[in-house]
Image (cartoon, rainbow, N blue to C red; front, side, top):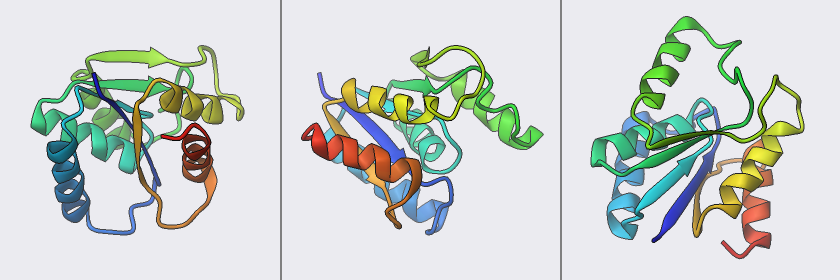
Length: 139
């Protein structure tokens, strides 16, 4: 079984339609049996939407309880609608927000995946941390 983990920026530097087309093509080429997404705004959720479109099961790896608490109502609605279609929901570190929980979630995604696909335009933040860890783990 090939499990694909995804990571990417919250801010999308390219049109959604371009990213959706590109990631859907990637999925069709690599044919993962399951995808793991961290469910953050931006690329993580876009990736989950591609999985829904193509019928590929995905795991929503949520870093902590209430990840969506500070988001707008529209963002929360989108998040909940995606979660309804997840094959599995994992809260990696239960309990409220603590800064350390985000990199732990990133490592969990890498550790539970065979390969990683990233959308990283600028090497910074959680995406860079996740990519660096994936490289260290040869994924």
